[in-house]
Image (cartoon, rainbow, N blue to C red; front, side, top):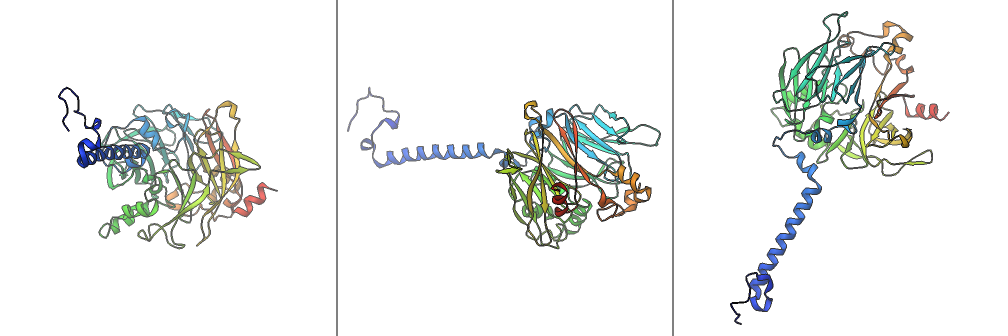
Length: 444
């Protein structure tokens, strides 16, 4: 069939199949299929961009959104209280505030001391040195600030430990048991570094496949030193850390995580309303058998939570914490005016189970919400009630002298400390060192 030159047939889509035949129909099918395929790929990337970005290895300039995305603190950048830190073997406690101040409490009865340093920007995490009751290190943008005392009568002085990449960010840090080395996680470099802070020297560096791996790696109980020890002896056999990343969390993106004393990992994943548990063999630890298959399961579904006949919105969990006795688990939710306390049970060879127990809430009309929480023991009361013989100033030397098996320590109730968006810190006593005791005390 002939066509006039005046007619516009440049676009093949205006021609009929009878005019062009099977070749034209094949070309049109390929065009439409490729368009649909492109739309599907774009939609998948747009929907799962957070998970895909976890697997990318290129470096980019960090922004406040990046830091907030990999942070357990609710509304981290604008939070009045970003983190509550306790000395695990002393009286001291610290608040990290949104205006980059370190509010240092030597004791409950003493007024707080405010610590500022011009390089201390976007502070996010901190930890007390084990063998020193006063030394504190705080991490944030560009490095870490070590606050220490050269003399008991002198105030704390600052010592800056800068990162190689000044635009990087310290997401978490922990002292090793002896207190001479420090482990920190870097967000942009996606690695865990072992530092000697006095020499400002990096002793060891472990690359992470995903930036969220620090949540389980740096919080292992009882000592993070076991991680570096077993990485060193296994480095010739296989990439131990990569195997652990695969076995423990798989392809999930972690939001928050905590370890129990028996080696069970509780964690939250991003955009998910479930609490997961990761359990090894009953008598195996993570670093004793790193290549063993770990079993993950759902410990608690937060989609439907009812306590004392009242339902609560628990669909957006932000952070999770567990107490010293592995009995109480606290869960903070994204901009919700309550904290959920659950009872945790995990026997040897048993699955981890959690039961909603209490809800700590405030009046919703005030638009308040918790930003962070942590469990702590009141060691000041421990010393005053039972004498200094049960307290050890040198944590590295005393070893297990203060532990959960101490008969006097068992009589103490652990408290949950909640930092609210208003800047108020609430102390909630939680009693019972077993699930049975907790039920009998609170329902008596």
